[in-house]
Length: 165
Image 1 (cartoon, one colour):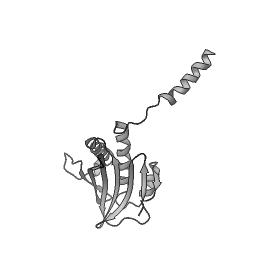
Image 2: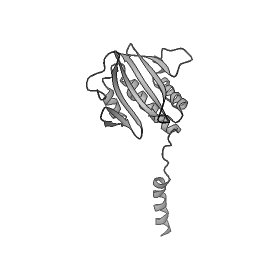
Image 3: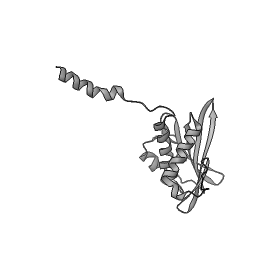
Image 4: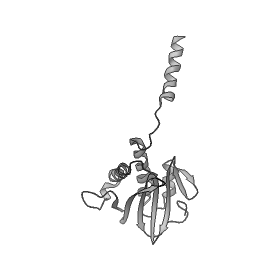
């Protein structure tokens, strides 16, 4: 009887002892940085694969874009002759969020970084298929909460039917 009870406790331990990802913690930052890199930067410069990359990243399709629960939202937007992949994400510590995203971009795309050698985290130019794709990270405060507007922008039109267009 003791053996059976011990097995039940061992099997139940991961479910009751599982940690949730803490908002603003390292895993939380890393996931958002990964999504920005694997969806927005990876879909640049033409963004034709935006929806496929968002789906592959496990995001939820919603009206006008994609959602990473609980708060992150990604979409494509045409503006002033440019096409941008936007990710709006909660950023309890905006400096850490900027650092996490820039660090991930450098890890994944550093060979195509065309900025100054010491880097510039808030505006970072990269070459994607011979076209400049600029990552812009803008801290925002909305209703007293810290957010980050992250985007990859290229000159030209957004593809039809992608990202809520």
